[in-house]
Amino acid sequence: MRRLAVLALCVVLALTGCQAPGSTGGHDSLDASASTGGDAAATPATDTESTAQPVVAGDAPPDPQTDRLGWENGYWHNESLPVTTEDGLNESERAAVVARSMARVEVVRRLEFDTTVPVGLVSRAEYRNRSGGGSPGPALRRFDNAKFEALLLVGEDRGSIAVQDSTLGESVLGFYSGGRDEIVLVTDSETPTIDELTLAHELVHALQDQQFGLASDARTRDGVQGRNGLIEGDATAVEQAYDARCGEQWDCLAGGGGGGGGGGDRHFGINFMLYFPYSDGPGLVNDLRDRGGWAAVDDAYDDRPDGAREVIAPSEYPDWEREPVDLADRTTGDWDRVRPSTDRDRPDYAVVGPSAIAASLAYTLTDDYNESSAVAPQDVINFEDDGSVDSSDPYNYDLPATDGWAGGRMHVYSDGTETAYVWKTVWDTDRDAREFATAWEGALAHWGGTERAEGTWVLAADSPFADAVAVRVDGRTVTVVNAPTAAELDEVHDA
Image 1: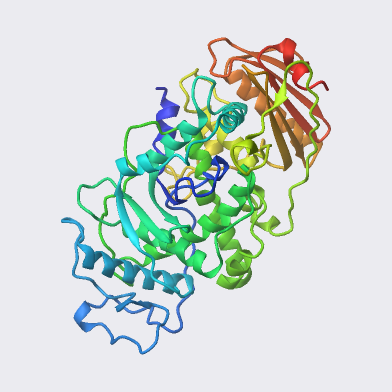
Image 2: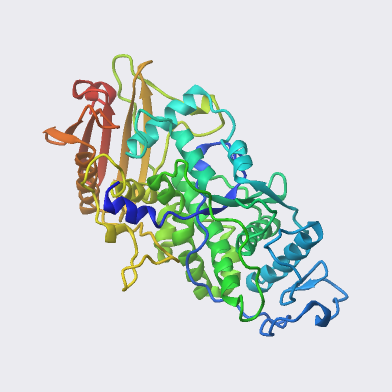
């Protein structure tokens, strides 16, 4: 593996906060990401002693007569517990840790839990067996394969859904299931332990569900990225503030048996895409808190971000709206639309926005196909002054090739044997459109593409994406057309 790949893979992070496998009814909703990011100072509590030093259990204040912020099920937020993680946690110890963590989340987030949420533990092997989102039908598989091929992330020799599932199976630390009203933590330890920060993150999701509801009408990749930017950004900001108090205002459990697994098929490009809400979501939450404190974050649940752009550029929230894109089917011959809605209730088109485009370009740093790349490491990886990777915000999605994305639409076609696609994007300005087209042609060149005519590329036979691709720029619009051969491009989309 080349040096840049090793560097980038060193910052592949474990995922936490994801929804239960299969709970959203489609793999466009797999956008769940990693465990840290952003820096949000917690609003000081006014009705709890949030600045008090940790107290031992025997010296804890008496239980209040009524429920209050900072106290849950018999435990105060700054109460020390006589438990350790080295020998695992029995049922009563786990209940105490959960109750205290709920109280701590209340102090940081300034919201009260309505009910206690059950917390269970599963091994990573068991989680892998659970994951997969059901059994997608052939239309959905064909559609998803073509979409990830269009993004230059998963080639024709692999199944895109299987690669996504494998990446999550190796990375996820925990998830909250609203349908089952429970938290499940994934452990790599042989003893039943709890990672307190992962627990805190998932408790925020339970709190969100109780106070605001997590149901959403986001049904495309970019829509889910926007929605998750708020949800995961909120949870990550709370987790970060919770962690900052450990050792200062309260004692925290050491270790916990998370770690995100090892080995397996962890795809850097997909991980980069899934990490987006955790990377940029805290910035959105911090911006909202600057505007109006936690109340502004609460209000955002009534008007969730429309797409990744509002998360990347919080100043554009809530005024920005995705521009609708019309894409007429102009196929001839045997090409017909692939409609995944025949398998599940979901759109028969895709919308992939700036976070997915950034992931596509970043992936060229780590693949084994050749030594080139479409971006430099410093374009997509945030480095500290000493050359180390910024652990709180390792990835950058705000690239010249993604700036100005205004909307898009992708259709997938099949002739019964082969697949093809048309991907149309609209940009704020002509310059934005040209910058994206230039960067995308650079990615095609990386994957073995040769420009045979202006804007028409043929990828090498040994490339994972061995097809013909046309990149057509018309003012603010860029249309990318794919077909098995250059001669078939006009059959797929007769421009």
